[in-house]
Structure formats: structure tokens, C-alpha cells
Length: 111
Image (cartoon, rainbow, N blue to C red; front, side):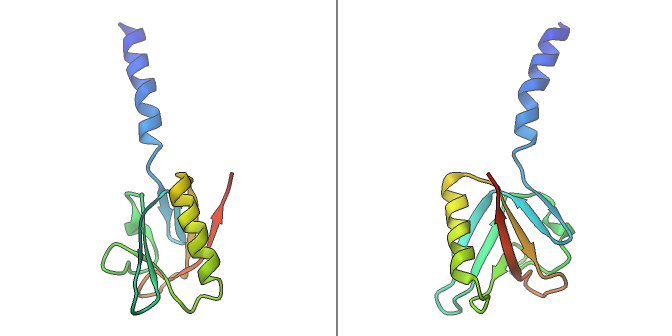
């Protein structure tokens, strides 16, 4: 009986670790949604993390972190986010704390 319980618990642990995690300065996890906006040039990012409410900013539309077109590394960051999304890799997105649209400042992709 104990072996069955342990086996069930062992199968549940990976499922629990699949969701990303956020802290006041950003989120680490998988990209859930990439939404490039044609008229503004901004890219809106939704991360697969349950605790986005801890971010020290206001999410755009209550959901999205914003990569502004004016970011000097806009193309590189967008490329990295697309790559991470397609490959199913975790990525760290760092926001500028206190911004009204959770403005993204940089990303990190680790192997």
C-alpha cells in the first residue's frame, strides 16, 4: 500500500514543477502567449506562471508583460522568446519594477 502511495506521489511531483514562478522583479517559466501588436510594435507576453500577482508592476490588460518597441534589444528579445516558446524551454523575463504595463527590460535563456 505504501509503495502505491509513493508511486502516485512520485508521478505528481513533475506535474507540480511544470508551472513557472514569478517574483517582484520578473518570471521564470515557459512562454504561454506571444502577442505582437501591429499598430504599437509592442509584444505582449503571457508566462505560464500562477503567481504573476507578485510582480511589482501592473500587467497590461491584467495578463501581459510588455516588450516595448523602443527597447534597444526588441528584435533580439523577441527572437529569444520565440525560440524558447518553440523549443519548450524556460526563460527568465525581467521587468522594470513599478511600470504601469510590466515593461520587460531583458530576458535570459539557460540550457
